[in-house]
Image 1 (cartoon, rainbow, N blue to C red):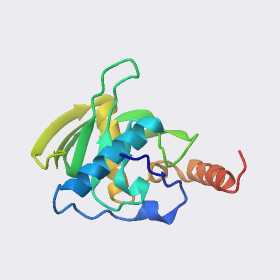
Image 2 (cartoon, rainbow, N blue to C red):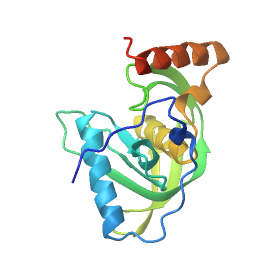
Image 3 (cartoon, one colour):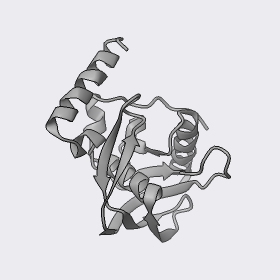
Image 4 (cartoon, rainbow, N blue to C red):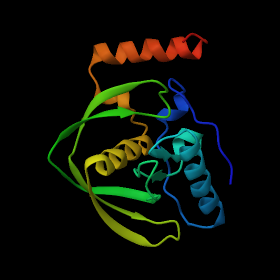
Amino acid sequence: MAIRPILHYPDPRLRTKAAPVADVGPEIRELIEDLAETMYAAPGVGLAAPQVDVPLRVFVVDIAAADEPSSLHVFVNPEIVRREGTLSWQEGCLSFPTVAEEIERAAAVTVRARDADGQPFELQADGLLAVAIQHEHDHLDGVLMVDHIGPLKRRIVHRKMMKRQRGGS
């Protein structure tokens, strides 16, 4: 297991559409372990493979509070098959350090995917888990949280991230 470097906006690799995983073998299991370790170290509640420069359709989510047992969810080749309702949530992103924006998403989702052993499953989620799944799923398609906010806020976030990239605060 290893902590991998997380790509930060505006890195163009974050816009890459991820490829499906052909086989959940040892390399993918190692990637899953690295994603979890990197997410926990950051710390965050989710991390997608494209955020660590691996353009594959894999992400992990764990919304458990620090004082709760881990509830790690692994998603390989996920597909959101149902969305219901709407909610607004203050979202952050490990690829956008120090940025948090109010994003509107579906309040509940149903997702089909494979787990860390390659077994298919279907999960119904709402609240923070639904938000995290949608957020990480977006990363697999090269969609970023700034794509869900208005043009003025997008420019402000872009300037903040460019300043950060140049070494400003």
